[in-house]
Image 1 (cartoon, one colour):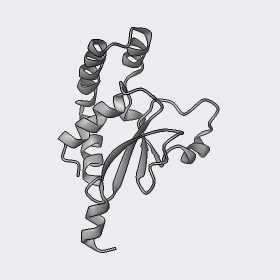
Image 2 (image 1 turned 120 degrees about the vertical axis):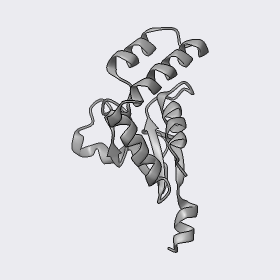
Image 3 (image 1 turned 45 degrees about the vertical axis):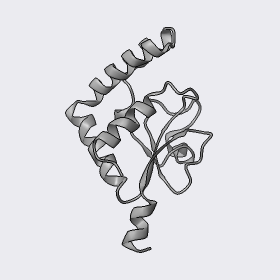
Length: 132
């Protein structure tokens, strides 16, 4: 593969863990926990790399799931999640993911089937960090 075609194949997307295959992409599991009943050694069926550091904190996720899932509440969730991702560890990992997207296709995965999911906020943060 030439350098030009490798760059053309790079980029950032999202996928639903367990449903979407994200063919050809490096699948990043941005979830705090493995699917129920899945052993650590079997996680390759769901994602290539598990990055729980990029998942919302337990407290924030509990707050989001225990309340009404309205657009207004999601905006609050997204703002709080972005603040969590501004820590040095998380922001460094986001910068790394952004750099990877310039070399290969990368897909951010979560289990949520709804459009109000942290993976879409994370996608925006990675793009702001310079993703392809």
